[in-house]
Length: 119
Image 1 (cartoon, rainbow, N blue to C red):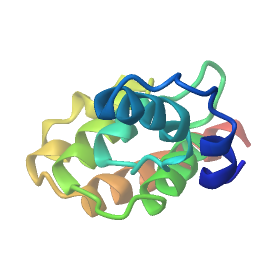
Image 2: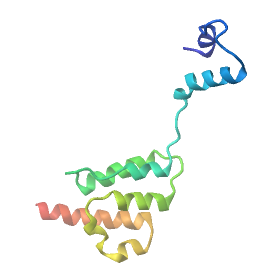
Image 3: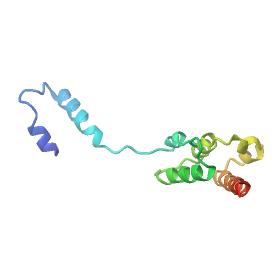
Image 4: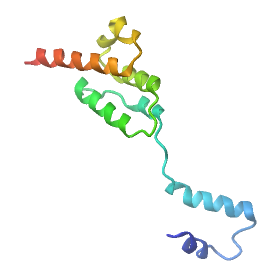
């Protein structure tokens, strides 16, 4: 429904003032405003039960690419908190760099070892 059609469909004398009109406009049209994805949304991306580390990393990367502005420290925190295999983080040198690319590289190496064990 367009703005004009919505306005014309308002019942006569249903608006008591400008603030009432404003409230009705916001209530009606606020759902059509797209929300901006931020880096903090990455904190909701966690490894699911039974999901391999490779699939989790791929899903996490996909979500990172959807962001307009990626904040590296938040992405790093989300990535490390979201992975279930905490054995990855038992080695303190992994997180000492605090570089997202280095942690991803470490995870890729871990994934290769993990997958080689399954063969």
